Length: 392
Image (cartoon, rainbow, N blue to C red):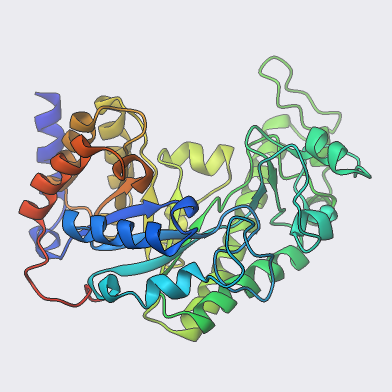
């Protein structure tokens, strides 16, 4: 009964005209599929036969390039004469899809050994890396890994203007030399609430508020500061400062992309809990969406629990435009039938569409392929034409 009430509320709240829009059926394609032409051929053929409309193709993984880049080293897994992005964009099946260049933004390294290329940003500019409070700049990679990483790895700091410029150049390079339909931002966030304390950001905050954020204690049991201003006030100002830093960078990305071509779609993969995204990762993606800084948000709603899945969607729809949200569904942590059930649930809500993570789970799984083919080709067929869907 509660589930039916949720659907009723959603349908009454939004115009039926939204349902008439062509839905997006997207697929995230991780970079290990781009290492040679055979894998790309198989991926495109599979995506076409299953009825996908949009491919989010990872061309920047960990500070390396799966294309010909002016600014970053070539991915080590690529042959020297192969450009995966160029090959994909000139493939005969390309006309059936919108191709989004998926860029991992601030997340740049995930191994406990240093990058092999001297050109890699971690080797060239270790002082650009984000860090926890009061961390001293190490003199070796081993020190960086021990001191600066979160549970995933190393991140660039949004506070560092040179790092921002480097990232903007990467995006400019892609949209200038490749006819992509979209730029897709991932890891467009801080590494967590313990991070954001790059000295440049601390200096900026101190200049604005005359407060020292490094004295904040994030322990659940100890919330004290030696400053006269109450802890909650300092923490709130610090959180909003970090949000603003990130939002300004997203605005700069928007300016670069739209100045080059207003029809290029700017999207972002985001944390699925709107509040948690904003206050733990300082990713204020609801603001980005409502202010038009991004065209589409792709919440990574990767829970296997249906109740949590629906709760997050309902939370989003309280304040955010549904026609700008493509809901992410995971294939890696639940049975294929459960993933399909979530796809069906999304189809009953007036969102922009659905996107699946990822092709890696589809490529060698006949059960998933059969289920998706039966459903997606019935709901969304390519019979409307031979060319890819219109961009925004």
